[in-house]
Image 1 (cartoon, rainbow, N blue to C red):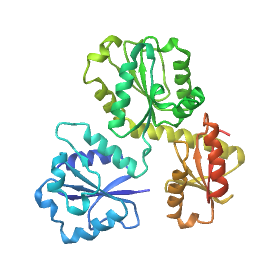
Image 2 (image 1 turned 120 degrees about the horizontal axis):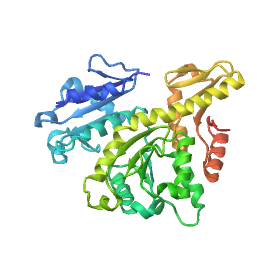
Image 3 (image 1 turned 45 degrees about the vertical axis):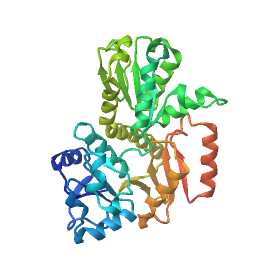
Length: 360
């Protein structure tokens, strides 16, 4: 599948955009005259001058159509420029700010583009794995900053309601996360629950960002991991004001690669099942199809929700050739909570699209 980016307004960082697209090979930059109406399109409107408020006639209809289809993102350098540099009809849309003093904002723009086109997860779930005795205060600060950056973090002390099976809930959230931030401290390996999280992450191919605080470099090997040897002791983390931001900046840099790693695991496990049953499945524009059984599949790197089933069904509807096929979402159902399994069972019985657990 090819995805399209169109820049309007007065872009001030063409080089940065081109560098983003080098990391997203399925996304290409187009112009008003060259974009394909039959392919997904995202318009980025850059407000860099007060003259950008007056939209050219040739762009006016394009912008209106993009607003209707929620396919446009207004961008300024600072929040206070939004009212003076963005057209009236775009001001109701939540703005994106490429701040001058924030070099990582271009990274967040890359992740926004990738999320819009489904090249990374849009649920943005992050699991924080840590040893309370060593570094609980830092874990709480990371949780708070993730919320500010509009992620959906999981931290055991904040995120689990009373009256539920603690470990069942925790394991579900671990496997359902896009990435794990592991605060790797000297006592981590001696805690059974910490090591269980580590082992599940490896078993289920959950991406990990390993932040190491004076840890033996030869310990805690992960299947997929970005490592950071901080050379910071646990007692010094609270006086390092930049540490939380540096950790999250590193996390955001590896989100696209982490998504592809998790997706690869889904596809490999499904391929094993297909070979065992003699199915010949081929890739078709982001989907998988089997002409023998008239089935088509869409890989999802998280536990499906009712909204996921609706959204993926809409994606299938863009492929008329697959209209008569039985539609299913592929997902990893290991450690899925019992109540969520019952919900998926009910949805499978009542919707025109089903789910396929690759682990059964």
